[in-house]
Image (cartoon, one colour):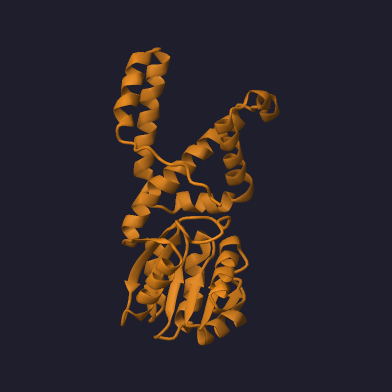
Length: 264
């Protein structure tokens, strides 16, 4: 069986190319602007996976969707699900499953990692069964949900998380903080935070910017975040450590103990 990956030259595209080839599948890769290869992919591939930046996902789906055979499967692995799934249903007549692998290209396998699937059009159920079996056999934890619920959860897991990283880094930049002078004083946790800021700002600024600006549920989350910041700032200005401690202890009951996972 032939599998096509649009965006197969990116980090996650290359990861899935290697993964499918290891299972014996034939893989055809294409960049989003390679129209000739996309046309071949639509004719030849039983499964096509869209693995491109969020901002160009609609454009790519509009190119490949009409080329897909009715008995094929069109998937995407972008970080948001509602808009891509809607676009795939609009542009293609084949089976459609929105996906989000909850890991990066640094992991060696699916073993132990979560993989979100949003079945949108399953026809006979053949392709949905194929995907479930594929993920289960390779040790993934399958999370099956709706595109809307996925995006709501991602507004916290990705949106609020990355917004906090951006705010931290931009505040340090605004204060013209000299990172080199801080190095002798850095704790391991702070060093990790600086590493993450560097990753977000210098290597994946476009991806993270699009994830935040395109999630419709994030503004309401940030309203709550902003209000909480104001309340904490007020307690700090009043030097009210007792009230701050109580708030932390009360909120702490919501958070379970988490076991640190080794990515390797």
